[in-house]
Image 1 (tube, rainbow, N blue to C red):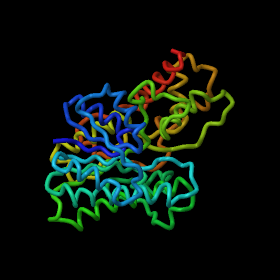
Image 2: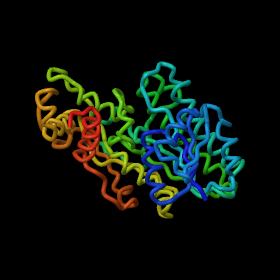
Image 3: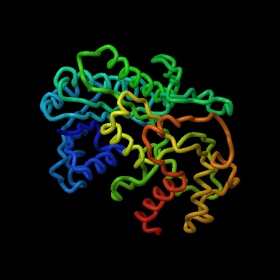
Image 4: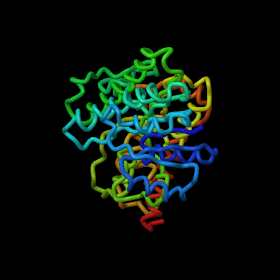
Length: 342
């Protein structure tokens, strides 16, 4: 039996593919073009356990029909990682909301139509932004857990790219849980959702280091290439390593106690100052080249806002998440080595 992974060329998905191949799973992945497929297959050495299919536009509700139907007898697990994550748009419905929500609804409907008897687990990559109310992020008395949802609706989220993205993740995840509830007895699969905070860590392949990286890692990349007099951005958020996110997806497939769970993946809080501290302390080649700011004034040393209580998720998963230092060190080392600076 196979694992079906939508958006297999994505940052998180590539790490999932690596971990699954290491455990000898057969994988059917999707990508938006044949060129992307050819590139990924080559990177994985044309591994016979990895096959790919083109799904061009997840905004279409029937986008996954043909592929799920084709492989219906082979698919036991579905990992839906495909969803837009960027802030460079003012077409909020077209570029963020519709693909996120329709992609989720569409893949579940395709499973129901063509693989209702074979698919046993569905894992959806959501986000911590589906959980928290951004207006309470700096409230040191506020505690958020796996039971929380952000307050955005389809209409109220369309004020800027960030709120539109927050809304897209909440609405897509809600749609998934509602689908499972509405179709009890019609499908046998259980649903789990993975809600990571900012995902840092190395690219799965060194050759994927480019001048501009995926949205989360670009934060680190920009700092590495900043100047001493550049201002330090006021960002307060949670973080998790991409390899831990991938592991959580794989375990959610494998462990019965993770079925039906909503899992927050967060290893701690950070500010840009915290990342700057690590870069200055651990990479002499950057000393004097990047800002210093006010060392140790960030969230790694001070309580600056709301608490993310994901103790339940950590207990269920049962493994220790990487620290900020570990994930920033590995992210930075890969970039600097690729650029010939280490």
